[in-house]
Length: 401
Image 1 (cartoon, helix red, strand yellow):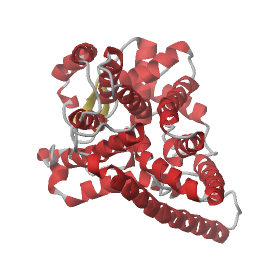
Image 2 (image 1 turned 180 degrees about the horizontal axis):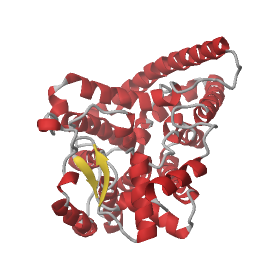
Image 3 (image 1 turned 60 degrees about the vertical axis):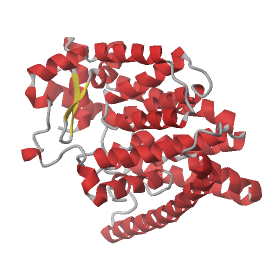
Image 4 (image 1 turned 30 degrees about the horizontal axis):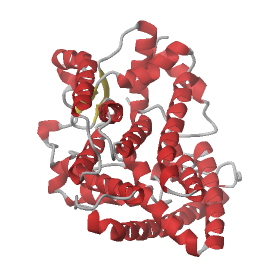
């Protein structure tokens, strides 16, 4: 059963029967995610509005909140033009819009945004409120997906670097709240041995640290950091297209598919190279203070230090992981991967104003085309399938509601 169906099952079970499972979706190798949040994000909206659209509206609202949280910090660091660039690269990005499915990675954006927003406000003061929210953003992400470790590692780096100030009483309070919310999980963990480990991990072949002794997992995770900042989108967005609406001719359909994939791949490779250049440019500017506590960073430098922490966190999490990551395993860091791009684009804009406007318009048009095709003729989204009808059929046949 896919993550989407697991969450629907848990959400409807809670909303209709009042049974809230203490554990989330089954994860690769290491068993089910702890906590009830996977059920709550589906079940609570259903209790407010008994419609398959209720959880979807709630998810889109969370996505909007994530953008507003990022933007509330971006506006203090960059000029309005770069805020517009961030709006385009975040809100209209196919990487982001693809995560509009009711599965656990789609809900991570709001917690990564909360983590970033609260960390920014922890630069100068030991605030109880911001520290409390900061820790809870990690804890809530933990109840959805094991990539929460990336947020925790970023916090650890920022703390060691001395660019966030923590309120220890707030940390203790947040930990108490987190443990209290996990009491149902602890009960289920002791009562249901099957949620402790994925049965696919036969004879313990996969283990924590498996990625560290294999080269590919870490290299692939690093590549995703650059892909998130580029237009080299997930294969699931591109490879499912058939273009059967273009013509009834099979030859024309195949030619269109080939041409489309060729264009997308070429643009993807070019923009990965640009992402590499942007990260190199940002790293040169931040390298002298990346691991030194002697120089207080400016807001722009702080932003880049955060992205350095995110990059390090991805490498460490890939080393600890018992699996090879796919794009959704690291999507929690999507927003952070855009920071070096914003700095690079701002630098480019100052010397190439007219070209910048042309590229901005071209990006808007390109995103629109890719999103339109992926939303109607893709592997996960199709104009031929009605979301509401499909959900109701699943509920009636599988859940007996």
